[in-house]
Length: 265
Ligand SMILES: [Zn+2]
Image (cartoon, protein in one colour):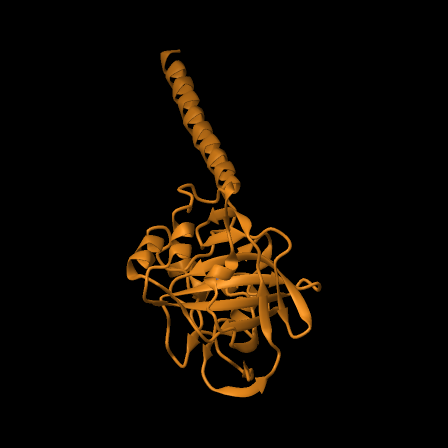
């Protein structure tokens, strides 16, 4: 009787241990499933640009990042043609709507600001910052690049790239830096603080033009790039301030394949 009890007790213990192990596995499984969304793409290591093509986000594989043939950025080297479409900006003041995510600092733009390029018009939707520059010009990289993103009626993009070199302190850039939210992924709207994107453009609107892609996943090849020839300036101290939030967020140079770059005559 005694030994029977002992066996029963041992059996119960074994059962209990097995059950808790099973429950443990099950809970672990559930936990894994819950935070099982794909790792976020980034700029370093295993989630960096070399791996974007194999990564998935919202069931969308970023294959173009790997297999595309008109990817951006590029090194703007030889200019193989000229064009005469004049570029003009009509950017108006907008309340500051700023968001810092893990990839950039971005300012949304209220409706009504646009560029005129030749006889076409494209609406500005946002602008954001990269460090170092994504595009190069004849091999030269710059400390920063600003992207002014315009949407076309056919859901494509015209993006103006403004290169930024070291030079004098830039009060307009400082105004943005001073408003970068501490909290990540949280949009902050300052109704009473306004800014004008025009202040971030150089005086000359001479540009390089080529057909490319988004420089972030999903690397969609629906972007007309206009990279301005004349850079604007910020101080080294100002770059360091940006780096406190974003250390580096530039995709490496992509192959040109058979694309050509033309320039405003
Ligand atoms: Zn960009």
